Structure formats: C-alpha cells, structure tokens
Image 1 (tube, rainbow, N blue to C red):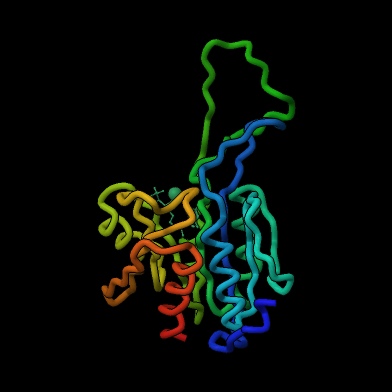
Image 2: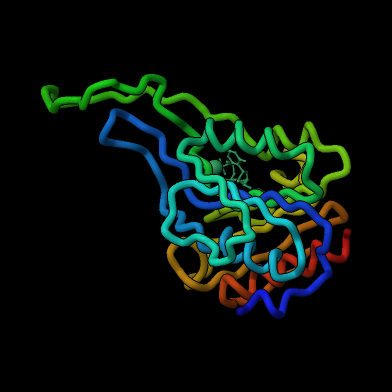
Length: 222
Ligand code: CTP
Ligand code: CA
C-alpha cells in the first residue's frame, strides 16, 4: 500500500546497501558477532525504494528485513561473503551505502566439529577481515560512496579519518556518546560528514526519519 506513494527523486538510480551484523564461525555451532540489528540498513532500503531507487540490500543475519518485494535482498552470513557479494554488485550501482556492522576479525580456522570444553583456557586466533568500504573506495568510479562510523569516543575526529582513509563521499557518524541511539534502539542520532568538511546532524529521531535525513543529503549530490 505504501508503494502507492512512491516518489521519483531517485528514479533510475541503482543503490547497494549493506546492513546487519556478520557472523564469523568458530565451529558448526558457535560464532562471533555484534549487536547490530539491521534496523538502520532496512530503514535506508525502504526509504530509498520509496524515493524511487532500485535497491539491492546485502544483509547479514537479521530479523528486520524490508517489506517491499521489489527490494532485492541478498542474504549473507560472514564478512567474506559480504565482501564478495558487494564486489559483484558495485560496478553497476550508482550509490553504495555501507551500513553493516562488519566483523573486524574472523577465526583463522573454523573447526569442522564442535569444539569440546576439555581445556581450562582456550585461545582463539583471529585475523583481520577485508575492509569492504576501503576496497570500494579504491574501485570507485562515478559512484557515490557512503560509509558509516560507529564511535564511542573522539567521534568526530575518528569519523573524519574514516572519510579520508576509505575515500568515501560521506560518512554517517553513529555516536554512542549519546543514549537512545544506535544498536537495538529504534532511534538514532546521526551526523553526516562530507568531503568538504560540512556536517549535518539529524538530532534524536526514529531510524526511519534518520534514513530520510541521509537520503536527503545524498539527493543533493545526484
Ligand atoms: N566496514 C567495511 N568492512 C569492514 C569493516 C568496516 O566495509 N571489514 C565499513 C562499515 O560498514 C562502515 C565503515 O566501514 O561503513 C566503518 O566501520 P567502523 O566499524 O566504524 O570502522 P572500522 O574501519 O572497522 O574501524 P574500527 O572498528 O576500528 O573503528
Ligand atoms: Ca569495525
């Protein structure tokens, strides 16, 4: 029913969105993950679809998926799968928004059988995952590239560093310095930084409103 109100500001634009956590397997029954729910990525996918875009959502494991069947959902589990799926779709998209909370480290080895609790201490060796945003920054041609930054301290400085190092056009800063925003909450307070040093803050709003706020800033650049 909501599709009836679809707008045209992003008509003809192919948008890739990543969302949710990734799961990094330790053995067949255990994994490393984080508190991401996928609410922000799903809100972005729905908002941009309703603004006329052709949306592909590459989503880690989440219960919160978009309701519109026209949104192309590509489920992935691990950071590596998300990396590969993003690379397959990046060259043909116009805008990429990387809202996923990708695991930074993954077990070097995945045990084929359930690990038994025989030892009193247990070391798990991890290696860094590939940085999807950074790789897309390198491969970028005409695409608008939007990254997120989750920070608990020195938020603006760290977000600015991410903007430059990953060659993004925008970084959406999710600061956990304020309460009522971020993981698990239905609200968010985002600050969008751009390459020119401009900053735009949404204030504490619903994740749906934050999605429209982010879309509005991107729209000025298409
Ligand atoms: N990101 C990514 N691939 C990774 C890790 C992060 O694409 N392997 C993306 C996220 O989706 C987000 C941005 O990079 O758009 C910033 O993620 P964040 O976790 O805030 O920063 P990191 O660069 O991972 O650095 P750190 O966690 O140490 O702050
Ligand atoms: Ca990280």
